[in-house]
Length: 304
Image 1 (cartoon, rainbow, N blue to C red):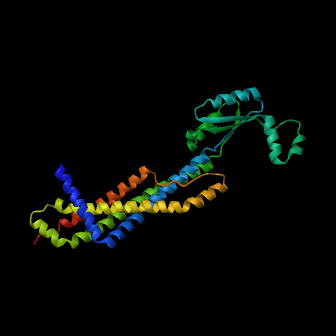
Image 2 (image 1 turned 60 degrees about the vertical axis):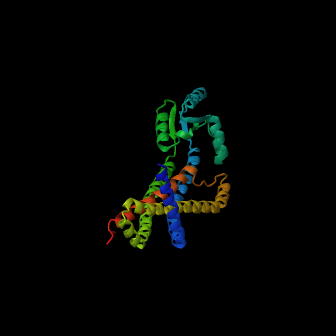
Image 3 (image 1 turned 120 degrees about the vertical axis):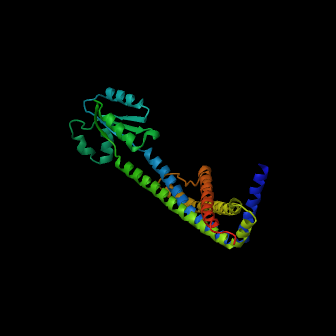
């Protein structure tokens, strides 16, 4: 086992030496991989931040439950207490008919005209704020229909259209990111494969000699696989650094814009788990491209 690990370690350093021997070509390949990986990673970060913003908007969602005019204040308070006990409800604020009329006079500007009315035409209202975990459109729709069946309730008002549109946009963006990532993953595999193909062809004579003295395909293939893996890993590091740089440049303008809306929102980059996944993906694509290219060309290279 120790000898096996030592052989792989030896091949790893040999592959590093081969890449260092052609610094310009290696840096170009790593840069191309880095830029290609940075695009879907950047869209992933953008989508993650959009979900954080939409989560904050979801927390402001409110249902307005209009009670029937013949419901007494005591019955309205009891209904509010009953609804408040439900697990999907964060808070319930009871607005009496008198409080509703006072607020309407203040906001509408028709205070004088409303004073001429013989009776209060406004019903009592329950302002219900759902719990964050139950603020999605489907749950709110079910909650609204459930509240509408109560005998004291005249009307339940909830504007779900903007929530549905926002969720649809986020879902479309998520699928777009995955499709783009798949296309770029294929492109990266081809890029690394072409780079390794040129390296294999450049060492054709050496490979023929190794085969002539009994070297196996696995022995010949190993340094090329490490080269592809290292190039993919280096490209992933480059993508991570490039993304961090872009986020650092955008952080201050985004904070200034959020401050204008009374928010403390800050851009969030890749966390450690997502960063490790990016590194693993880059290494895997580099290894896969190298494996495909080397396997194909080794079969046609035979000693004469």
